[in-house]
Amino acid sequence: MPNYQSDLFSALSDSKEQIYPDVYRLSRFTKTDKLHKSLGPILQHSPFRKMMTPNGHYTNIAFTNCGEYGWVSNKVRYQYLDKDPLNNQPWPPMPQIFKDLAANAALEAGYSHFMPDSCLINQYLIGSKLGSHQDKNEKDFNHPIVSVSIGLTAIFQIYGKTRSGIKAQFPLYDGDVMVWGDSARLMYHGVKSLTAAPLKPNLTQRVNLTFRKSH
Ligand code: MD6
Ligand code: FE
Image (cartoon, rainbow, N blue to C red):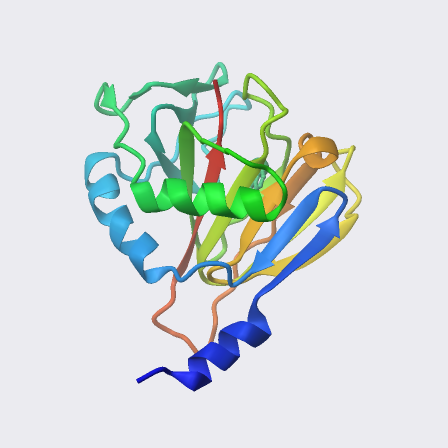
């Protein structure tokens, strides 16, 4: 039996919106239960961890990676490595559903044949935030970045060409996908401190997947 109610819901809620020049938000682009399941074996092999950064502090959020390369930090630099420094083994492979999702989302925003070699997996617990930063450790800024939100709602902030001064602020819900490219590629951005959802007490975290072509 077709489920008319859920069809209607998805028809009403699916949308593509340019929320900043060259930044697209694809609302409720994906269901997240299968993505969540795929994370299990990845986390078993390469668990979430906080890492030291060049400014002498640990990262506010815990993270890990899958794919050919993983983004990591230490007290000297940020870089992409082909092995997990925790176990000196290759990162877990990127699941096919991750690759398909990233390519389909990029295509929706006008970027064909996006083939990420890296998926950074960020874990936000309540109270975690991500400070203003640029993504600039990749070799070629002509490739877009695709980012997928899972779980609790985040408030994403775009600062533009400078580190401060909020130019755009918008929520990212479970299943929302963002695609960045071209003029947006080096814009400063961050995520506000995560807050709990009182009506969904079982939801205690947000996981964000960022897909990149790093090499
Ligand atoms: C997050 N995202 O949404 C962190 N960077 O939790 C990012 O830092 C990000 O979503 C570059 C492009 C898209 C992003
Ligand atoms: Fe970023």
